[in-house]
Length: 320
Length: 278
Image (cartoon, rainbow over all chains, first blue to last red; front, top):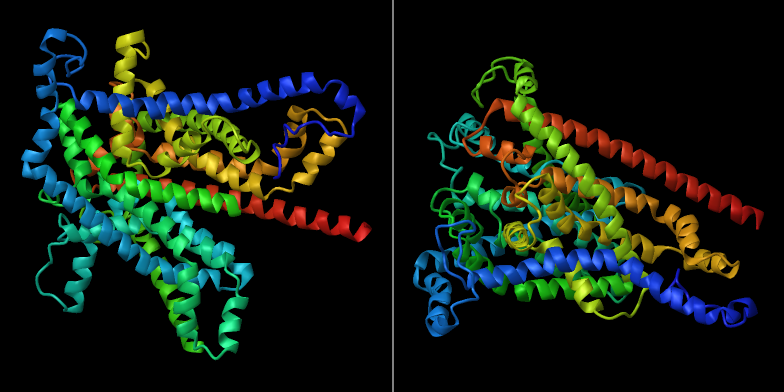
């Protein structure tokens, strides 16, 4: 991987290639552009520009028309008034406690769910990474397999388990632990269960990748020096697996903050999450500018975690 | 030492139970004759029959299938190109932006992507008159945008692990870069392409949030139908549908696993014979 294969510079010792070197370099540059352009252009047009449009519309005003927002540019003589009105969407977010609460609650739910994923996922990843080599891949496949079945269906499966006359309540009543069905569906608890359940594979995979790559001779050295297994784990394995923990946590935390389906299906009417607020602003109130402002505010919140994730991704890309 | 192993394996067992029990229960209860979740009314396949008679669901499933195949094919093409760019071209203008645009969709909350895509389509329609309204086309475009990143990541790791000397040998023998890529590189990274294709197929056929934003009248995908039904509560028909999905996925994964295993065994064997001869 030292140079740009397959479009490699011509070999200096090959006389035939040297003769056509200029032409080759020229066609190589064009070849590279031809390879890179389609994905680059696609992402710029359909991923980057849309965010700029969201930003733009978050500054415009709602109107009852199609599309339901006013154009930003125009009426130059009213520019001052226009700007005051334009910031209204954001002021609205600050003034109405609903949005602030929704943000805080999303962060809380996503954060605690990430922690739970870590607590369940770490021992799993560790056990798989230390299992005999031949069964590691099947064990890992078993973690990934549920991810391939529908996300929607997996969330739905919990509805049947958690509802008042659901399977878990029936089981608890049967064991005699409770004599009254517990309200579990339509609570924050159900949302936690749903998020941890849906995102667990995303935590296990990067953790496994770092734990599996770890140099085991470090542990042997620690043992030779009289280190107890638990101490060795704490001072060798745990610090070395931090990149995996960060990558896994970001993979869970960032999408969980904006999660909509899980709080909508499993949460109660008072389970406030920012994704849900955005959805209802957009689909129920048809207020596109406020929905855009909510999206921009959510992105601002997520910029730091996304940067951390990209950093760990690039690092692991370089070492592999 | 022994205790630790037991603790570890029970943690693993607990994790697997957590992952699989809900799905298993769902499949079992799809054969429940009773409409109530907790009452076992005997084994019955009547919900499957009702499902197959529901034309709305069948139409939606057909549309989802078309979208998923189109999406998977386009994303695999674009994602592979992106992976080649990232692994083989070390330096080029805007590399940071490019890597950013590849990794961000991996974690971007769907609801933001969905809203952004819809606003783009609306703005495009206003300015150029295309796409006229929301349809299958807009769904496919939106799906490709988020799934191509996943393909890129899968292909990228395979490309980075690949032995470059094979390509160099072909180059030294005078093969043109395009030919080297088609004859040498492509067959080696083919399993990753297949994995990427399947992954983007799955992401597409499962997506509800982004599709809800960019869909239009008359183009309702299967997840949108399921979601609108499920929002009203548990329904045995959806249990049956879920079981069919689980069955298809399990069979697909099994076949894929066997193919990969065979290829791997083949590769090991050919490497062994090559080293025996040498």
